[in-house]
Image (cartoon, rainbow, N blue to C red):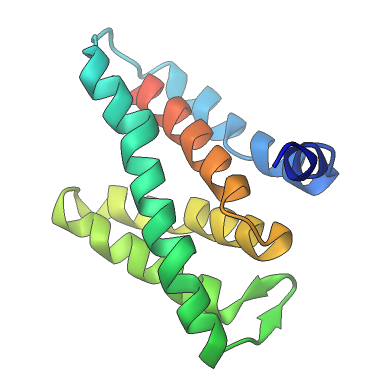
Length: 139
């Protein structure tokens, strides 16, 4: 596991994926109000939800779709696009349409990292990290 982690973190493409949300976070940082989350809310938003979503979407759904549609375009697989669409649609149950739609592009990044490194560790770290930034701004 540590060798895989070292491989992931030493890849320039992964480091770029870590930097992708910064312009969005900076733009929205001026709109942030001061609110506080409980420890339970923080654990759910930053660990439980990302782990559960990645296990389901990148661990189960994306590989199943990939077996049927293994084509890729510029490192983005059809399975990743379809999984990301499903990921966004499921966010409609608890979020407004704009918020749900905004999950599509980060989901593509998560799926790309799953395809690139062939491990759930890469998208899981990205998902937790992206959630930390978003929820810092939102709460």
